[in-house]
Length: 218
Image (tube, one colour):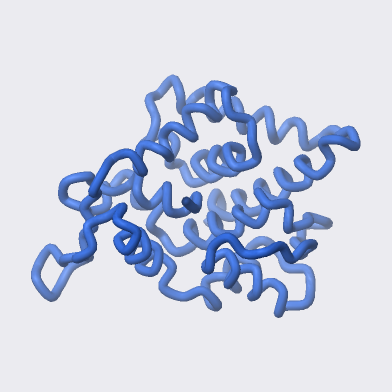
């Protein structure tokens, strides 16, 4: 499941399917596009140099939306600032939120009617069929906070949660603080030259911070 999908699910009220107000950031198009680009960073497909991002690999697709985001960057045929990459993704992969929610409903994760609160008006609601998928996001963040998961995927989730301010609302206070310290440690490590075995991971984390910073200033 995509990181963006996990964050979308974690923000939904399980019974009513509405977005919890204090977690609404994860349903914003800018956040979803950023999370989609984070998937390319996790796969080490993006390079970061002089404040810009460049598609470095063209790996086989594992999700159609990631494939569309990758294709948009490839068509640009130049290095892009993180802000430009996010805007380009939003323009070339439209209706991200509804596409993801309808896809989750089609896979049986959400109830599929997407009914509106006030008949023809108001936002569509997507009740959860099971809290397991929603809890997966929380587990990923908790494991990242406690150091039991140091994968690039966990790092990406941590940076997304801290940069957007979602960590405080998704996690218990102690775990949110641990996650903040984890991200601080990752950022500090960026100031040191990595050894050859960890250079690719350090590059990926640099891309993640460049993208996450756009949520902080946005």
